[in-house]
Image (cartoon, rainbow, N blue to C red; front, side, top):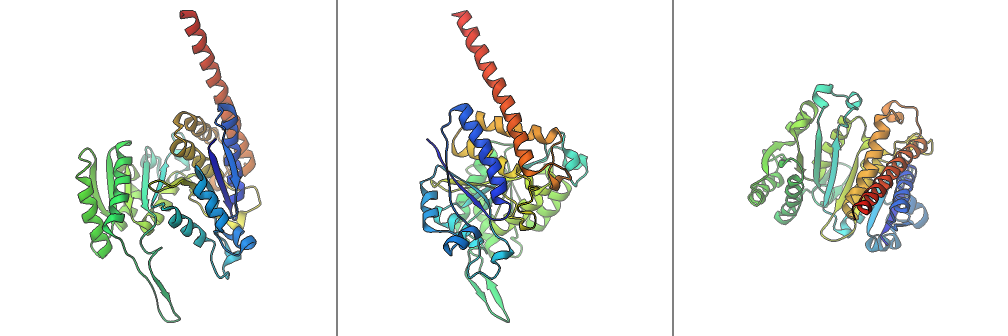
Length: 366
């Protein structure tokens, strides 16, 4: 029985995660997946209960899990805490060796009007950001004084090689193009990044490679997003560009992500923050959390057909006009989740009917 560890976290994390878990429970019951769920404190919630954002029992549960579903962490409530909630997230990624973050974003057909870009620019945009997750400025040595501060950015050739392989392999399942984003005209780490990516690219002659400076990439995402297939980049650049990319589809609340390593369980989470200003008001968008559940079913459990059922139910809900406040809609978080499950139930019913018809036809032909 696959075991899913659920880390609701802070702010709107518990609200959106609850809707995703309900979708997984419905899918599990209907398709005999036998999923089990185990909830643990994490982030600011764990600071409140345990004095630290990543308690040892939470980490051990994650290590034993088949997959991890995460909500969001952080908020001003812990601004003066000795340790920030975000330290738990960085610590979890490091402890599990999750060095690759996959952030797919696309403009849903029929919803081009949600994009801040002109429909002619937004139509067809479908981009996967492959972000290096355990190196760079976020993990480098830091110093902080009253008059000066510094953050050390370092990358090794091995770190760049392994994330590059993830990007090129992903591109083979898409449109076979990788855009490596760096700042090689200024940064030493980016010079190493570019040289290393070019060497790795030789092992993938069927995948096209181009290089862009990060500022040029940011401009191109806003003016011609459909030119991109897979964007490969380092930790901080990936964090920024993927948030920018999320707006193309209409809202950061729509976008999911997966974090993976070589063997540890993967983490699936929406890319949005904890949004403490709207927490508890039932107005958060659970679409990103539900989309994260879709990725979990597909990538962690290896069930693409079941993932497609939930993914199509989610998209149909949006196309039918069900929108939360971030999309200028009037539906609440729970109501949106309920509608997705209604759509999922309809698709499950059609699936059963089709399977029964196939079985009947086979019996007639026997």
